[in-house]
Image 1 (cartoon, rainbow, N blue to C red):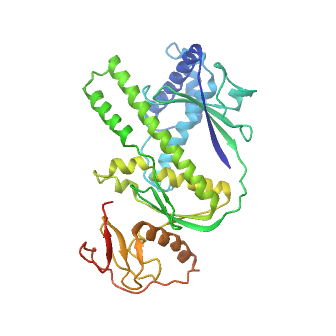
Image 2: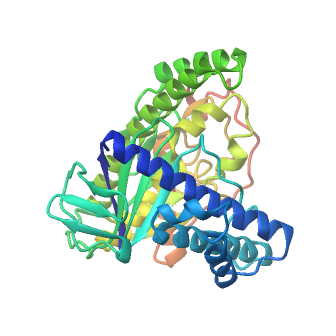
Image 3: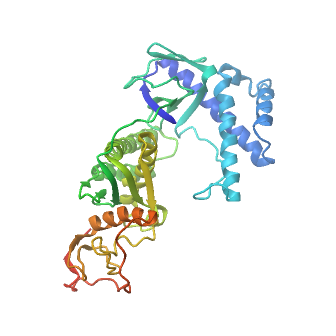
Length: 393
């Protein structure tokens, strides 16, 4: 299976100039090919590659010869892949949300250039890029195999990275538990069916700084040096939040996948939930989709089973002990007492247990059957027979 290993590096002043020239050429090639494709019918990679060769012979684009041709050709291949995904999305061949057509690249966004094997080489602790020179990345760990490609990246905060695509072998580790169900939330990021809880880092302080600087940015004149300085400050804060979140999600997903043979998550409608303007920012900061992607990828790496429960499964409306269905509950109701068996449940922990049991019901090996009962109305705070605690979420 394929994996990415990313390392940071600090280029010299001369290398920064060379990389800036490379990023500009890659961006121009993409934008020229995209403009031609929007003007006429998309012709495919072969025709665009021939047009790139012809454009290098003109006075307007002869400076494209000063950089390596490998990332320029790779830029056209990426555009071809983007158009293929877009057409497949229109025809219904590609699952998920409908994709929009490829967009033009801007110099203020993150920049990248991809080198395949003919354009780079690893010699000792350095990485040689064609017409750039030797770069010295900070190796946090050794590459498991020879990389098939390397992408040099400059993010919005002017940080430089090398991203390697390598082949990795599956890891064989014995699991401690058979399966685990996970219920995701805001105040408590994850509640596991075994009773464990995981709390996400507090992004409130950094988020307040971002809001303050964004208001300052809106009042500054476009193109000014002060606005550029403020934009970099915002980008650095966003990177700090993203790095903190990524570190937390990687550690949590690794722990869960390594200890459990089967991981069961609920299919959350994130795009629909962020339409709630009171919770949209908090939901976006949690990174639920990124956590699901990490769990799915690491399950494949460790040879685990990964399951997703249907979003319409009434996990918070069923008693995890006896299967009695008590109906919908208001979000502020955090503790429930079952009318049938009298068991007192924490709302999130009960949902996590039902998520875990949903996998067994799908496989047809569950010994528990749900009781037939009508769905009751939303629980009232005054209904003491069903609710033992009503706490704010």
